[in-house]
Amino acid sequence: MPPPMNLLQTIVMGLIQIVAVLIVVFIMVPLLTFAERKVIGYAQVRLGATRTASGTRGFTASLNRGMWAMGKVPVLSFFRGLPVFVADAVKLITKEDIIPAKADRAVFTLAPILSVVAAFGVFSAIAYYPGVMFYMPKSWPLIGGLPFNGAIADVNVGLLFILGLASVGVYGIVLGAWASNSKYPLLGGLRSAAQIVSYEVPLTLSLLPAVILAGTLNFKDMSVILSTGQGMSPLAVIPLFIGFFIYLTCGFAETNRVPFDLPEAETELVAGFHTEYSGMKFGFFYLAEYANMIVVSCLATAFFFGGYYLLPFGLQRIIPASVPFLGHPSFLFFMAKVSLLLFVFIWVRATLPRYRYDQLMDVGWKYLIPLSLVNLFIAAVIRYAF
Image (cartoon, rainbow, N blue to C red; front, top):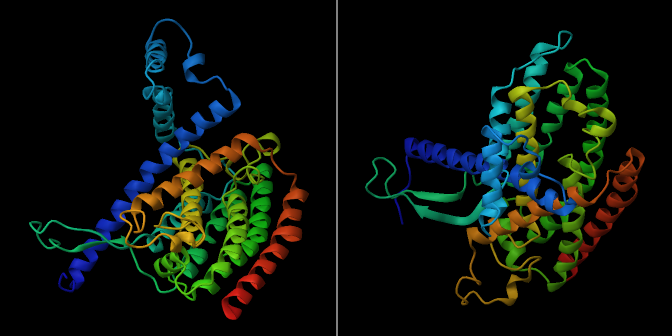
């Protein structure tokens, strides 16, 4: 058992954990965008960069031939198109930052920053492992032998903190749309405001059964209790199963993903709320969307999908803790489930069409809210009657 940390050690370890989490997220976001292109390309039989690179000489032609050669190797074939993806990232970083003449410059600049800060700030309260992941090498000065925990901050009301901070992200979208002083972004921003307000209600209600069954708002404690079924009736699998699908549906709407991508809607709003953005300001909105997808997947994994354990919906109780690996929590289980849910986000985008706006509102108010209220009642009955 290591000795208690002093203030300086606490600050240093906190900064190390923050940097580690940010590095992982910044790696996952570009990999996720690349995987999205590949999955949609396979699902819709699209022609990619290996088919459309022009010319027989020059740099693009050499890349094209190289990617065709990669296609002959089973594992490397998945990475065809990666050079074009890297080129897109470089173009995004180096592109000129344009602000419309009639825009509110201060708010126009603040909006994407607000969105990305809200998206990344949520990761501070997410627990990726219920305890110490490893100890720092004892030979290191100041932090030698100190624990690297599975969460940056073990907040007592972690779920409440996450929901509160995540809801701030809509202000970035609405302010960016208004500050652009353009009709298409304004329509996209108004759509986003109405959509997120509408779907935050059933999303929160879908999480309340998990809170009732677990009896706590602490992220780590909730995940462990809901995964292992500690003190819960076997019937708890019913509200957890229903809540998972309600939450995931609302998660698509909260992250503006197909089939709920009405705030962007390229077919009628050009690009919606971020039409006037370019360069890294657009990149911040892009980062925020994919970071929010990771957050939604982390919450779904932790509270419904088994968290750090193998089986979902509280079914882990059937595997004794004496079973090696499968009976114990693992960071690998958590990340594998998060990756699976991220694949579902991409899969849905490749297969489902966009809702009409009236259909989007109907799904939220007429179906998801009543269903989430019924599920909340079922969870309360199970919690206090069984």
